[in-house]
Amino acid sequence: MADILIRQATASDQAAIAELIGGVYAEYGDELCLDDAEKDLTEIPEYYHDRDGDFVVMCDRDEIIGCHAVLPISGKSGTCTFRRLYLTHSRRGGGYGKLLMQWAVDWARDQGFKRIEFWSDTRFTHAHGFFKSFGFNETGNIRHMEDSFEPYSEYFFFMNL
Image (cartoon, helix red, strand yellow):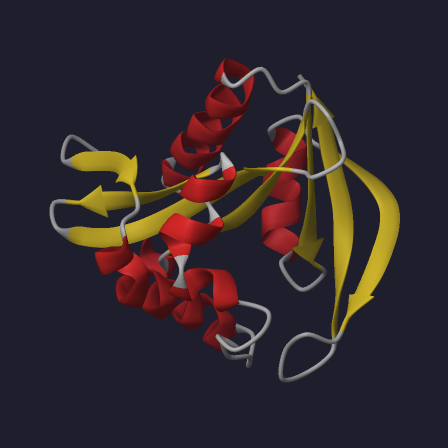
């Protein structure tokens, strides 16, 4: 992991980020919907950085191998949400996800947030175990989404800091 760098994402990273996330979606027989559900990936600086959040990429030399994002939740003082935690398939299970998650938790604490909330696609069962091992709680709440090519559902997770 000596050559691993976590840095703020820029507009010039957007195509590589979309390719990374699209590759993960393809593992589940799905695809990106950049016109709706994943529109934020076409305007990362505006959607994240200009809204007091952050979006980072994890790089191995010049290759983007992962990403993660944090945003304040409008109307919920002291609460932020996590978004876009993805790793290339070959990097899962090697501690890279822990580095990205620790970055996000530390960032949230440093910004003064007291609670983290997020939704995760019900198909990402391996990730749900990872979230729980990191200290996140799953409430059992499920929401049904129709902002992509196919309907899907998500589980709710939270952590008090």
